[in-house]
Length: 420
Image (cartoon, rainbow, N blue to C red):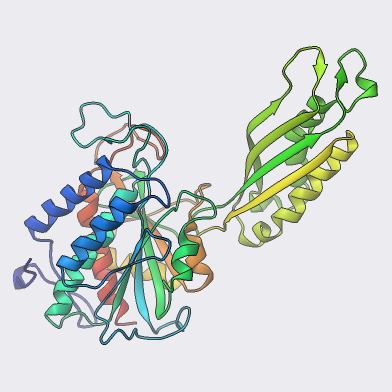
């Protein structure tokens, strides 16, 4: 892979020179790599084939990747001499340390429903329906470009690649990466997430919160059952469950600032087997989502108290399992500006658009508890297409030009970061 063509270099204000467009051979290789991942999706903490493929390609580029101690996922430094990063400790002070590029590598437990697609999933009931195959390929491709530049002595500052497992598993595989020192020596971290509402060739950016917090709620209600002819002698458990479903969200909504967007949504309610028998047990499952970081920190106590109140009112014993998921991804201003400047440098001001805060959760947020960072929405919709394939659907696919765009974005960010 040669990146030496002066004709394709882009001069920037401040004297920095960015590498030019990707060689066609590398473009083709990255598309093939993504399609191979797409055909072989693996669930969280089971990404052994994916991990091996990433590690093997980085080693062929002369790098020294290491697999996380949990058995899947990879960390790889580029431009680090004698194994010493730019700073030590969990994170580095702003303005110091490496820039980290993070990708998530796991798939989803849903079937791939695309028809007449040569690279559709070959694994039953498994699909890369959230674009993690693209995220992985973008970070890999960036790593290959930066490794070649480092070999030529042209990489201004070391960069770390983080290929994280189990993003789709609460509370997320970021915890495993952090335990393995993913942020040791890191000063800033960036990521992309596929967005089927944004055209390929463009990115969406937002300073501040760009995703929401997401927790999981499991409730068991118990009480003495009985005949439906005599509900006054029982705990009317079905009514108690129904009241939890309807009253708890309303009650919580009056105990937090309405601007925080705290919302409880139920996905499962189960109780009873016969029409004339009041059951002794009921189960409810749902999610708690929140737009605001501070309200999210208080959410468990607020939600649990509301459930207990409603359950006690109906004489039901409640057992509540509140599973902490992820806080919102809050894009730091300086790193958001870094991504904006990098994209504009490569593709012009029209390639960047504003984006809204999503109600989806992303465990990239856990890294931002330690170092400043930002996530960009990577456009994957074919320009001019009106049909939107939403995330987490079996027919999800992307315009693969987005891979090149993502590599250019991250490569430019690595160079501009060295000037700040």
